[in-house]
Amino acid sequence: MPHGRRMRDPAPVGRRARVPAACDGGLGMWLRVLGSAAGGGFPQWNCACPGCRAVRDGSRPCRPRTQSALAVSADYQRWFLLNASPDIRAQIESFPALQPGAGRATPLRAVLLTDAEIDHTLGLLLLREGRALELHATPAVRETLCDGTAILRTLEAYCRVEWRPVVPGADASLGAGLSYRAFEVPTTKAARFGAGGQQGRVVGYRVTEEATGRAAVYLPGVQELTAEVRAELDDCACLFVDGTCWHDDELIRLGLAGKTARDMGHLPVGGAGGSLEQLSSLPIERKIYVHVNNSNPILMDDAPEREVVEKRGMEVAEDGLEVRI
Figure 1 (cartoon, one colour):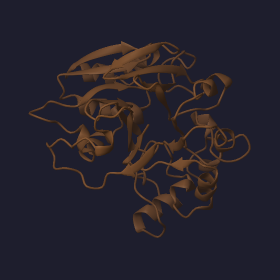
Figure 2: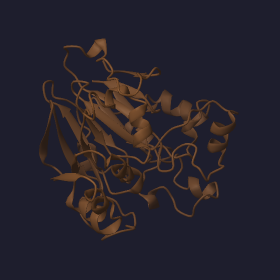
Figure 3: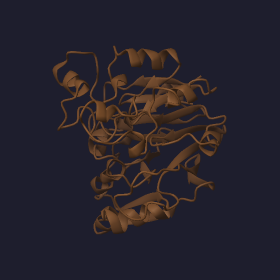
């Protein structure tokens, strides 16, 4: 069965962490939640919503969180990132397995992008000191990073970028014992850059450990759990899924924004037709909410909404959570 734990005692910078004893010589896949919050993190720098106030003043039990990203490995030596958040440097420093070995040798092998959102891609610029960066992205995402945000064109001025085109529905090998299949995640969210109707604007990833065939799905942004999206969850051992907002009109209720969760491309957790109602009964060993917005009450350990999530057999990620499948 999978298990999760937080690593609380990082090794000094520049020293590689030992492979956990549970992983030595065994088959499986390790997944590390580098960041579990939505864009802006928790607390968000310009926000005084109840959650952000609580994490600052300690008035309620909750933990700070950085912006969402996941690391995956089949051997605890070679690692792949799913998204590169603006907090990537701090996330690497908090996780010894991602820190450099001799000189500037790094265990980071590649970055896989689910979309071109700033909170998922700005960290690419913080990886510019590398000699080369292998980047997996759909043509739509690559186009936005080149001609929209210019993140990719800026990065290429500093280091060589080896682009690997992501084709939704096609299996692709990462090497190091892992493969993946990206899948289309339909969205009507207004595009800030480029054409809104492009295929491949948002994808999820099903990552498989080749020796065992066991798989995990990373789905930090989903507007609707269509039949096609739900089919990608079949037989997976672990699901990391969009937990942005509890209520669809959450930001409107709090006076923080004029858009609903669905307007921003996110299915709410609670309520009729929410992700909790749709996913809690699925026979998946671990179902974990990630990309949780600072406004979502499930970030509070003592919130009734958090209790509902846990009673339904789902979890709320925190930074440093590790899962082995």
